[in-house]
Image 1 (cartoon, rainbow, N blue to C red):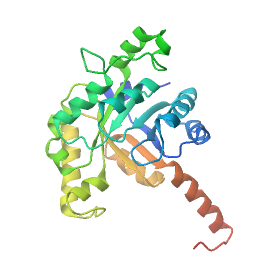
Image 2: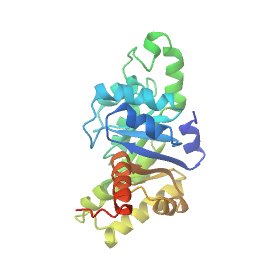
Image 3: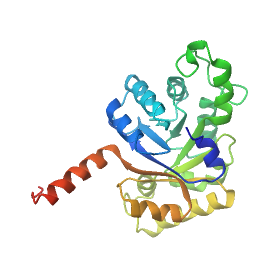
Image 4: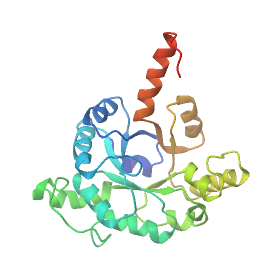
Length: 255
């Protein structure tokens, strides 16, 4: 399994995707296709903590890094997700330096954080705590989501927090915070994204983006711009797009 932390530290491109369907077969199918990492989405899906465990097990078994996009910047939720065995978290709506510190501390044990100690799957049920404690410090990943204009204004302070390994921009919510949801041609939205790119480049911090539509040409544009934490597609769109493609090829008119 590739060390995602090492790749991000060295600014090496990584390609992942998004899981919203809480079934282990979907996780296995996508994990076997060659992604560096897969994110299980607990913010905009019906996936529960109970369903999370077999998804993480399936992804890990295929040699892929399992990440979880948590629904909120919650110490309790992040702790539980990490204890289940996530290799890292993507934390939404990190708008201030304090938000970033809170996310990192929820992942790391003292003295680097404030995470409480539990002996569950991640710690090999008590038989591997010392190994896991070292691993959390050296290899766990914290990605902050930059999806509000306040976060753009505070970007340098957010990215300067020790333990933040990278960021991923949320263009829809960012445009919404500017009163222009989904209007990516709006100059204010363009300027905000350009500012994000400039600051990340200046600070040599990994940039992230989710190309929601499974389109390799669109994804390549972001790789060419220097985005190295790149998600391409999402499970339900891969499924739906292929269904539509085959039906169109068969000449069936779609409603």
